[in-house]
Image (tube, rainbow, N blue to C red; front, side, top):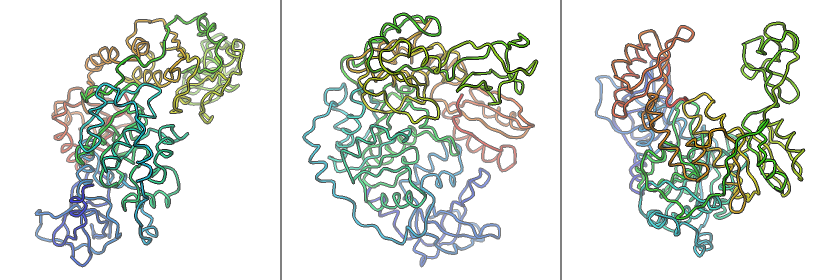
Length: 607
């Protein structure tokens, strides 16, 4: 936050002001005018109490307004002495509301932890002294200067602005985050680092905490009181670096110079609750608003980040382990994989299918196996057979028996046969286990839940099993999500290990991207496929639920794609919009919500 913006936001207002009512529904998503008495000492971002339809409700002051109706009610009282946002942050919050067609009240509420009034009484002292930490690290030369376009990024971090896509060498992934933050601090600015998850603590977050000590706000975890106290301390200037998950993109830190999105392509950077924002887009908007640098960092960037055309920062030479491609043998045991496994001392086998195998036939009636409750697939897992769809105990849909012939294949079976091959212990990370890296002499088996930010692991071997499953998984982005996970797992083999991928489609663009360590071929293959499907990359996508009139109303907006179905008496529309039609769609959605035609809008749903 610039000093000018902070000063402007802290000004006391009086007279007619626009207030956002704390009612997060689309039909009420507009400002209401109230008379603000000067003696309340309120201004932009103040939480106040106002009369609304005969009731006392909360709302946030948005600023002066010239939209003054004939009859104006008065703000009753100031609820909190702490302002929820300043003028600069209000611009970002309004952008989120418009981009994702979400009520501004819900965006404001999500931008800060729930209020704890007793924490506002205790003042805030000055922040920790960072001078020693910066001096200690100033002599450490990181790898950025040796990267293509690295000097340009370092120059921007020292006092400029811009957006960069950083594709680090695996062994540099943690180091680059620290170097970027240090460069921003050296320039007298602050930084926000966004991680997709915090359990277990990412190596990147731990490295930032170790490098900058008390200057870092670890903005996650804790109870309600602790989180609000931390938010207040950040607002008061107590920290120069904020590390957190999605909501940290709104952290009220002053002098912002860097927003660093770590593992930008990770699925958890999308908010799953309303408002359904994506951290990448909000970070880019806030950095532009603040005159800061936005860094999208990932071993395999998302298609969306690639399409934005940011300046790419990457190693000048190959920085990827050798990757072999082989055809899978029985139960996914290619001879080459078995051979490498025998000599490996420390490794990881990525097995995307959970369980021990799939029930194929009922041994009692000889009919194909399916769930008696929903007809879904039956999977053998953790010593029992259950439906993979509804979770019911496995019983035959035809005769009710529970004895099945199992086609073996899955992480449990991989663990079993790997134990008979490897010369070191073999263990498995299940869905309920705490993820961890392989021990000094251990082979680990696991799925996507096991692939975390553990930092450089220097494994002897990483195996990607059943890579062909990615193309069979439902969802428009299934291959992209699989490739992101493959990249993060294979990176553990740097700098001296090797990886092996089992697939029957060796020339598949995703497989070849993994082999080369460069995702461009996959991008060239996937972008036209997305466009042909009706959902081009970069086009806003919404799922809208409403009444029977909904389809006709949305067709008037001329969407690029509109798919319609009926669910439980409601009309559900999935649509992709040309970006220039987003504003008109938002206006229409709010109007239709007032008429009862639109019941819910979900932005960027998983397809």
